[in-house]
Image (tube, rainbow, N blue to C red; front, side, top):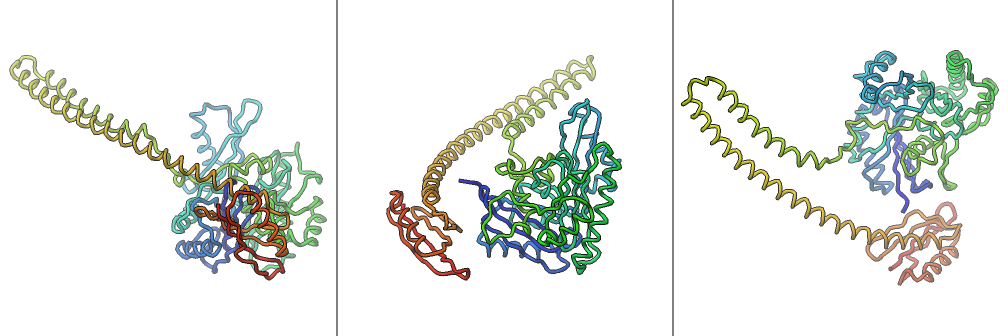
Length: 482
């Protein structure tokens, strides 16, 4: 069964939710938030936003714990850094030193993520991303209040860059309160700019003038720093957000800058009711999931920006077992040191040495008995863990058996699915499978039910309901018995 990926993008305007399974978008929703709950990319009302998010998930009937989350690129910093070739143990310290020198904000106020990229010539090429701790902490604490666990975190500019197939391109995204400019060369975003508009009430024409002015400065800055590889008119420019659905504005942008302008596309499959342009950031975030990463473009700056402090900590059974042993060894070493220092105090006093040795020996025997008890307790705990592991394996085998049965049912439902029918949900409960979907006519529903009955997979196939919806099609529910 294809993995379900739930993505959330949060900015000053609100929250956008998108759910995909496999390479297809399944659900989407947008939640505008009252002014003041998020300001400048920072959540100021964590409880209020968390309550709104829980209500949105409930309305959309989405039950999930792990999510992929994205935040605005506002106040985030990215830098490509070239360092001399260094031993791996020294690289982290060198990157932080260089970040302290290059970034306008002290590293202590940022979550810094970086990874190396291949480069010839005995150099180390590092792509660095820095996110303000204040923005990230507020977002992640809000998700904790909403009972959600982020597994991947990204920022909007890099999420959009992952949708571009060309290694060199210009990306412009326009939202109601801000806009992004990304210049990507050989798969590396350099530079990235996220800027706020002076006012949300500006017309699109006035916003376009601001964007063109800043684009010119950004392109001139890049060309002056890399004159051997300038951005010529053949480089494609992709737009998303508010101006992507305005052909006249796109043409105006092309005429002013001399680049071919086209709308950014989604690599995921969508249905006719879905408008990808409003959810491209969510789609870019979904492509960071390992199962979908092969669909992303050649951008090399793909990494999970979730701070280490918020990542799940793996359990080390070696540490669990080693800790009691270390305590026992330390407890044995201390009296030995005391014994050695006592015997060297005064050799002349033989009687005192014998008395001290006798006391130490008695203490050592007592400690040996305690150590033996500790070892027996530890062996008992190991036996309990082994029994728990065996129980877990039995449960896991049962789950695998149930999953195989469910996959078989789902395989039959999808293999017999007519092209004109769109499924909205498939729910398995015990021996019952409930299928909900949309069809252009009742005839297609009956044909689908007949195909399922003929498959031999189900003992009963009932058409529970068929009703015409607002778009003129038919909403239906089928109930199947295994």
